[in-house]
Length: 278
Image (cartoon, rainbow, N blue to C red; front, side):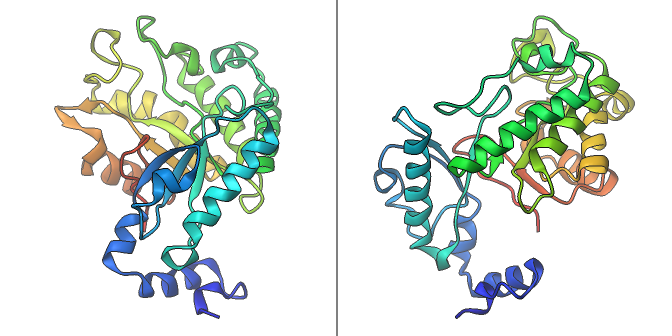
């Protein structure tokens, strides 16, 4: 048995041993994110070195079918690249986006309850339903503070107040992640300032001064990092001070890693590279 397969070692030791055996091509493959629809072999046959993250879109109509397809996808990938399983993610803002899953109110509706405990219980149900069919990362919650009603994603947010957004974000993250080992990873998005865009447009520039960026827009993210041990963050698609956030050292390293002390994974959206923390 390979040392990295030894469950008596801690996670860091196993990761170090695994990394020492991976080629450069295999490491790069772990940064890839793909969408699978139908037979995994059809989409993933050219990923001979494996793939790090996958969105599985089941064409079937039952939770059992989804579970079987997720299992088949995991097995297919694990046959390559040292048996490393992919992380299968799903949208789960108002419930797991999957057949037979419970549908909950939108985030703005949950926020209107002013009841973080209800949000945490909602996320606990989402976690149970995710794990039951093999999803281990939710691309939720949306922690954007949204103050421009022209922006089309207001309904996905917890609103305009950073303190309320922070409380709800912490509650959702706690409910979804559980004790981490038996939970699912929450993905806070979109880091950072995505909800304040020029003209209320989606995927646009975000003209936000540094103090406001930290005291308003970073507040929910910092709360979830500090109080819920947030496991992953998705970068914004916008730009601040003329710099695209997706490759911004100032935002993703200087602010997120150094100032806010985030230790988890930074991921981007479908079919774009996932930036996994070291």
